[in-house]
Length: 361
Ligand code: PEP
Ligand code: MN
Image: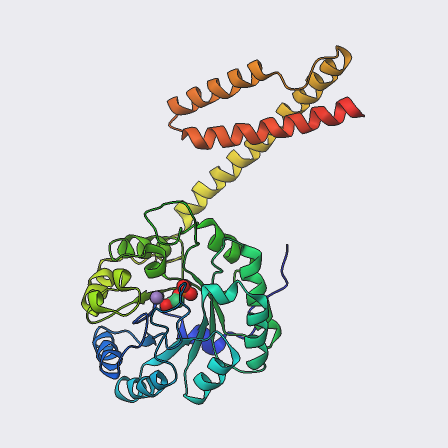
């Protein structure tokens, strides 16, 4: 699906996010006034300017801590007074929106469970109609790029222009080293469809532990993400929600210092060398297409032959041989087995489709 969506008027939004990577940090949940303010002061000291804290927590199971509620907004006001940080909270319904706006929250985000529900998204978008506030939209829990895009479009149609997307990974029944599997191709696809949208990564909810945050953050930067949302707590072990994945502000500082910052087009370097390589890559791509054209012409010839001689299209022995040989040759050329197999399966499928057409014409 093509989208007409363009984030129109990005002036103040792009001002806010011009120094990549933009870091948003703070606890999973505001728990006490002391913890909320202490975390903010520690973060401000390491140069973080955008604070996050969950006030209303969407929890998978009941009877766990579901957030402190509106009182947390008072603590956040104090954070702003003491540190000058911008404040962001998660909103999941209209009441959350009104209370957050009244409390002077600067940025809203919608969580993964909310993005998966178009009714909820529409209600929140309607409540924000014509407002100027930035809204960050986390990916839905399921790996559905259209559902994510749909939520973005609902806010956009409500007149909001400062929209960002947050990649926080996708649930899966399968066991994995991640709490939520990254499936990087999904945020990449989103960015391809709406190139203007600022893209954040939330390595905390992808990882589910404190060990993978550094490498996930680096990967996001390598992929040209605009920012990171990372959960921090003064005493992660004692956190009331998401204890395993929260890190101290000090630990965050170490991680940020270790990141290699990459730019799409670093200033002051000549692009000539890369242009030369790109020219050669374009030539390779043309060659690949020419070869595919030749191959498909041969497939046409073999299709006609099989039709005349009443042979089946699929010749399993021959296909096994082609695939096996290709993988073997690929390995000698340092080409990943899975990669070669995927390409040849796609080519084979297209060959079958072509021959099918010839047989039935
Ligand atoms: C959160 O940011 O604390 C949160 C609940 O995240 P998600 O919606 O990604 O699960
Ligand atoms: Mn959390």
